[in-house]
Length: 187
Image (cartoon, rainbow, N blue to C red; front, side):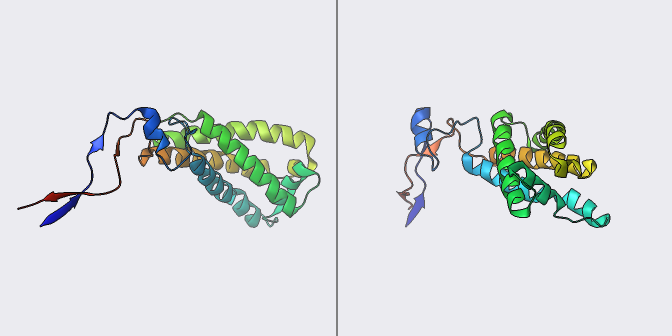
């Protein structure tokens, strides 16, 4: 009888050879999240972080799309289409910044907490500048917007760290020498 087993792992492969075998480009630094993880974090955080201000808007009888329309003013004038584009660009920008700054192996809980603190910092910076320059953004309730930024940071921090916690390959990870099984004879 023959039993398929995986090939033995090599631990003596140089880090550059191991990194070049990954499915991502070899320019990805092993101590930073992969571009695909950054995109996932941006999509999740961008989609979920507005829940608090939406609930607040609905509970107070305001339009749940007011914040999205107001964000359009960043690209010229308020409007839903412009607002969605502006929101996507700002979300991607801040997610990339978080990815560059998030410490590796912080743990998902710690990363979410640090992300929430970072989100509060983004709120202080973004909303201070935006409320001075853009009347449509200044008209939004500040509490919901700050809460959205804090949730954004927590989601981004947790998702970026989740990739590391799930065992994302790094330059020091060992890999099998080939994907073909080796055959061992069992008597």
